[in-house]
Image (tube, rainbow, N blue to C red):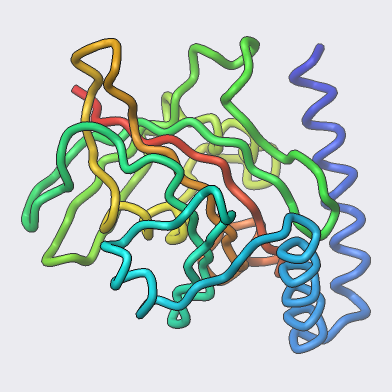
Length: 218
């Protein structure tokens, strides 16, 4: 019942966005998106730093100051909460990456999808990721993807592409599995514009905010 209710809520959102898109130009939709991102930054008291400053800080963000780095070429904002245990993915490496996330639609200020609750605790988003000289590509193992599960109602298929924005942190975090009680997996917060988002966000021009963890799979 919970699952059906969640689907109905999302479908209502589909109708709302479809009606808006009929009357807005793409330029207007992008402007609306920029306004939503800026409003979120102000509301959350986010301090935006440049990539240059980010590099000078050894690719870290000061969580105590609520810092997010803005990647100008993609429009993605990222905060590294924890770099995580283990090590970074090496060039030429292929790895299984396990993700847990909360996805928020910044236009509606609502939680759209999550696998961070007890109801969906058995579902972890599993990706096969390739690092090709610093360029990351990935595909979902759709049999265990919460994101694919939630959005299959729209597409009639569980074949959903990994959002490009999800791959941005992989250049900067460690990818490992906890070996002791003190080991922690990587955690990031990211603001993802529609051009770097999941398919429904891309087609309907809305930004998402993600709270995410990354863990190396077996």
